[in-house]
Image 1 (spheres, helix red, strand yellow):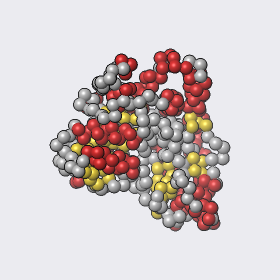
Image 2: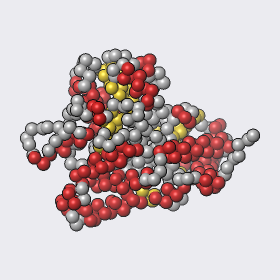
Image 3: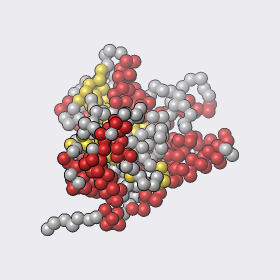
Length: 411
């Protein structure tokens, strides 16, 4: 028996998350397919930004560190993020950026494995992750090295000289999603500590750090968590490691008693050790409010809608003949995150032409048109509209217009 084909309108009517879009402030006449780079603005975040600037800072001034509990925001927000990535309380803290947090975790982890001198990762990992390893090795000396392994053959590349296996769960170009539980278990059988980057995972689908027995993780909050541009990142340190873990950026907020103002550093024994300088209260407060959009819903429901949106996009693209123009370089839907990647020699220009039609996606060098699916504010009608516009661009070769080929500073 043939499966019934539903229209975009029918799918929107059946969508259990359909009301969530009302919690976001979205521009009119715009379909946003780039939530995997920067999430849309939650209305609650806009309201909190006004409150923290006008009342908390403007009226309460420095008393807000106590009165409005600014001092506890990194842990409060960290535990909220932790709930979204499968971590019990006291294992996640929000602070700094992914890059800085990677340096902290890598430095601590390598010290926990003194007889091992190799950090392993994939060559197609996000560049900042690789750069941070290269910079750390420059500091540690020639006895340490980085080793590149194939993301499709990780288990066979694991050897007992590897101290840390640093992986991004979802490949930023192709969307290929690694099996966190399986890879972590295999690494730990070889005595290797695992460090997972959740930049394209947190808020997009179910992540189970505790259940997967992960050692360490980092992630950003400005993508699927909708924390805003430059929103603070987060660190996860499994509870079992927190006593042995010692990260080198020993700023005063990571001290066990920061307001004792002791000249000697004594690290906090908890996840708070990862704090360095004074937290960015405005950004942290906005993120705290933004996370409210996840109240009352499950990551499973978000993942289910993501898969339906992706399948609908692929079906509509095929119906419009777009498979004649693009190569789908993403794996099967069960093996990818909440995105699809298409290869085309003119991917950058096509993306710019699409933006001109009110559909915002993004380009990743050298030739990838990347389409992100943020289920909280995307509708099936949005997808239908986006595909029709892309088909028009390809049929009429609008991307050949020279204005679309001139690359901007941010691509």
